[in-house]
Length: 410
Image (cartoon, rainbow, N blue to C red):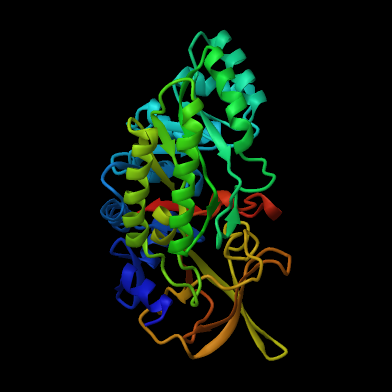
């Protein structure tokens, strides 16, 4: 069974159409006031967190990286299911603070935090993950004005990366974190400052499907943190080892063996506790893995044309909502996301091949090349899978001033 057939079955077919949350997409489009729209399956979201809980060690907490999908309804739904949130902007922080999740279980990472963002995080009691020595000094200075002692963790840029990651965020020169060799120098400064040190954060890479690579990175991460913890100004209470779990976007991709990763992580955590991290809360931070597969992007065919023997389906959506599906968000070689005719989801997708293009006036607005489809026509709906992460908010929504897409959790 192909990846697309699996995905159609996971969402379900309702009266011949693709369904989301038990409702066919044509009704969801009417409910949204039209297309394009993003629809997220609530039950699948709950199930994915449950699956992760089963795979991860019982003594490891789960943090949701809000950047993957900051839709308030998604974050609210996840609040009772996960242990923590990680945010990368003041706007994301406000969304997380609106949930029942306690502020001290929200961490704020990312380079370039402004003084206003630091001030807001300190006032709320959110943990600031320090990206530089200068950021530490700015946070302390801002905190003196606020009158609240800041909670801080050190984000580490390790000497290693993670093989097979779609996007590397550690190893070599990086804008992220403090180089591991410089961390021992900054720890005493944190101790002398009026700041509450809680621990460390290390995020080495994203979108990785290779279990052995993730296992090795987690092992090295915990070893490095245990070594650096010897110079910490206070006992380490927080160890965020990042995530990077990938999802299989393309036909040749094999799903990550999350059970193998979880089993190995239990061993690494035990070794870390024995090496001096016994009082720490270990955290795995995931975004795409949690929300990516639970969403679909639905768009309507508004024109069908043949140009020199090639069929083009022009839809009312495009790269301004789905930059990733257009191949411009981390892909080196452009490949199609899984795409189906949502209107004819129960039919064989082999009647014709077509280019699926968006409504923007640029050749970059290509959502699918040589896509096999049933006989489709103007007015039919097309669905792109794996649209739950890095969709709308990772796209140039103001490009050519096209309307926004609707979002709904079903």
